[in-house]
Image 1: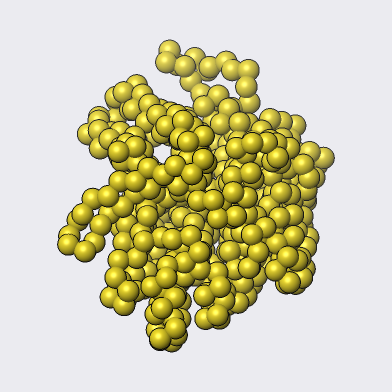
Image 2: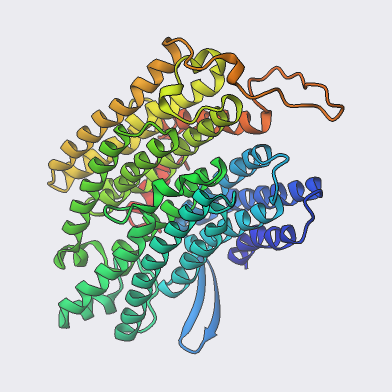
Length: 503
């Protein structure tokens, strides 16, 4: 029952939090942190067990012929570890960010449901279970995007819902059609034999089903031209933006791509059907397109959003190459990009909260006014560029080697182009933050927070600890994930095990 317990650690707090009054701050905070810490502790205890090959399986028959099945294998636990770890730091950040804001019980209820859905996606052992939680994720993230209730927030949420529900329809058609053709579809490393039989007798049907499944998960992965919802959804509060980019939605899409390619069809069959080449082309276009669009954005969160469009496509590109090294690079990039991007969005939230800065053109001189936050932004940005010894270097290096191993040297050219563009839209920001005079006068900064007695509070940090500490912690991990990549049980080591078929 441990897979079910992993779901309950976020589901139970969510259901209780919905019933709390706004002034029950301490109880809400306790529930949030207890659930997040419990999930991390369970995952940490499972890692040494699961990497030895032991799998924990739970099945629930919903209707005859269709089971909801959860399993803790290496790949599923890898994704749960990412989502649970980043959920914990995002929870701490969100508690500080939303201090005194309205509708916090509603926010944190859906926040916890979002992580429940992500955990269900990770633990799903068949396409039916995956579909249920994949669509649940759409429904519970809509209120988070619309949380502020402004016209822009409601518009962004409607567009987000339109895109993701369309993807859900494609996924539903693919799952239903494949189930009709071959019966219940459980994930199998290397592909399902019944799917291979279907492709042998009716390759056109298998190709169309594969395209439907890819399109369905590709919307959440923000692959071009299905990416339009992501920049618009940046009207959401900073913790939600961090959740969308680093923990939940786009990562669920990327995770789904790997499940469809490797565990449903298999690399070889996907290549025979021509879908692997199509995925590689779309991923490459997305990588370059996202970077080019990021260059033109002055709004900080939108620049980061287009950067995500580009960076998540690395995962799709790695999944489209017939080489274990490329697969390992794609899998480890799920973690590396998560820590880098969540750090950047945390910093964006801090700049907005403390200095009322939302635009790239306003970031000049920020390094002298908020040095710790600017340092965290710098570390994460250098990692996104792919410079050693940061986490992004490990991902790009592995993907480049994987491209060469697969006999696709053009992959290196795509990665180099992306790296140059990454540097073009991050380095000027870093230079401006540390070397240029302040773009805004001090008087335009936010007024000091007041203590309960109405007296301005004195603090030694440049921002509240609940906001600053999670930002610094994730920035440190951006460095550690690069420096300690060779350690046992590191994300890179586990990614290699998964790519070699040890899940």
